[in-house]
Image 1 (tube, rainbow, N blue to C red):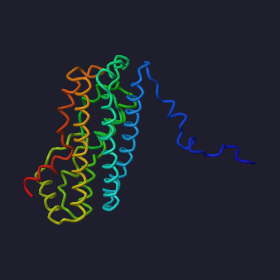
Image 2: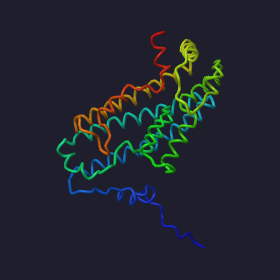
Image 3: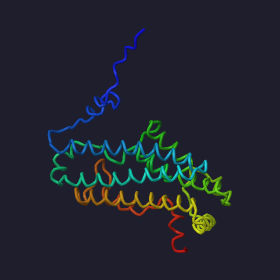
Image 4: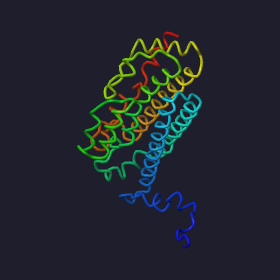
Length: 263
């Protein structure tokens, strides 16, 4: 019996018919397609980052320093691309955005399930995010599940234990659904890792790069919003730039920043 499946092609492997048919502008304005494409690309990068961070956590918890560093390097490279995409969005003037903004209705970047899951994976624990997702919806369940799993920093602490560092039991056995609270004991441990100047210190520095990279993306994002809509409310009734500014300096790994003044 012969194989009746059509030969695999570049287009079929990448499902390009589906991908290229997934843009549905709601106006005839030239710039709406750019807005849609950029945000769809962001969602693809969020998907890849979630995939990479899952792999990173497994490698950290297995004590695999070389592969953890490699994966962190890839995540950082993706973040640089995400930041660079803001340059493309900023080619759109306020008037060009306004020409189709009303067609967005209640849709808003606040509703990005993947970005909220990404934040949770990186350690955010904030039930206020659920206001954008109905009870029992798949998006809400995904975010809640991420908030109940070990964060990247939790996996890093487990990594430190595999490297022979005496991680406080309270840090390893904490309530994963609660926000991480900076710990003087953990900070002492991190200082010891830096003093040893080995693989653990390298991983710690890449985590600082990751933290700084997300802050950079948030900064570029809020400046783009200010440039495009000024102080107007955001789409979907959000506070726009006023809210976004409050997130710019949020630290993913506060202990890694706190020890800087003690080195």
